[in-house]
Length: 546
Image (cartoon, rainbow, N blue to C red):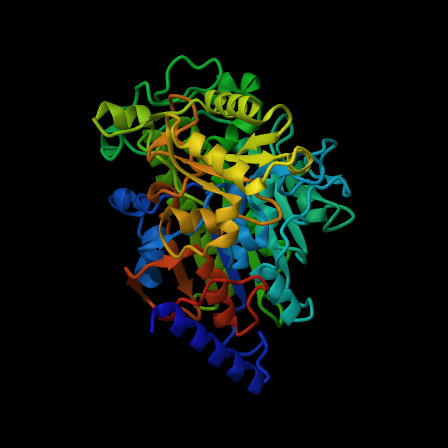
């Protein structure tokens, strides 16, 4: 009997006990507050690589006093921000919750759609369309939804992130609020009328006070340059630069680069963006009285600036190292606030990531590791030309997210067999430069894969939303610029991320047994003794539970 089977049995026992005792989340054993933290683009090895740089009160405290799952992975692709946040909180994969990308081709409207865009609602806190958002495209509940259902909506749920999708998807469908940061010239926290008619007074006051002005400053290293031995040399060709910046090395003179880089948007691509998130999260704790009621509340926080920095400067940069050293201090600041407000041991917390990242292929090639760039435009042209020559025009509707969407009506009209068309395209693609694996929708429908890249792709395949043919690039091969890191693949560098459980209801310790990202939500549900999210396919991590 494997650990997942044991976990399922344990969760059933816990639910039976909960029902028999008529347990509620206002029992003495329930935490006052659950805090979920997602760090955008955090590889697991950032914990070990920068270990000596961290304070005792941030990541080290979480690991030393909590439970560290060292061998945790995403079990689906594509590994993007939207699917990552949805999967952590729903306890399932894109195959079930439906968030198959940050944006994707919609077969019904015949157009690209954004994972949280919703024109049915108006923006709050801005005159732009940046607040016209909701979680409507996520078709399953989140753990936060289940908490609200369990307590008859007495529990309060709030999501906070620099990114809209990082706040909205974790908070779920029934959240009291979700807030995200609009940079540009104002630097305000905004929301959607999906949640409320107008921003609360404390949010308006926070925006009016312009505390974000404190971060309108140059980005310099926190520590002496000689302390950053875990990164490549500061000035190199593997890193990007801000607009009108001559060198990629420190210091980054934000005060001089401000206007041409989008004003407050510049903060997003620096450690200061994480500080802004902590500032706002602490204000939410105080003004929303989170954890002060009779039922358990939920605060979902996503730190997104790590992703912006990684995309620009790459996995091995001093910028990414400095960002994580500073993030460690933000984690410590948040923990200290939780201790003071709720009391140490009265709250539960988990920390994980929405995906990892690849090392810059140009850097890998420089040290003789196989890697490279794939020109997605060339791939698209070659696919289109093959289909045109073989079958005629108008058979392909869209190529995006490494998927090909066929015009099925046209295929029927011309008398072609859909399975045969999918297979012939797949056979052609596999011979193209940069392509490692190819799969058809027919394969995804007819087979059940249990391991390997095939299983990871299948878990990301949604029958209603995904394409007809899916392809995967060779390891360490990406369609991207020649600098900075990206993500999205089924490979280990994109799917090995932390999970740390900390606080009330969790054991102390560690495990090297494989866990998977969709195990988080059922683990939290078992700890709270509430129902799993309705699409759950993961299992509680038994070793974690106290």
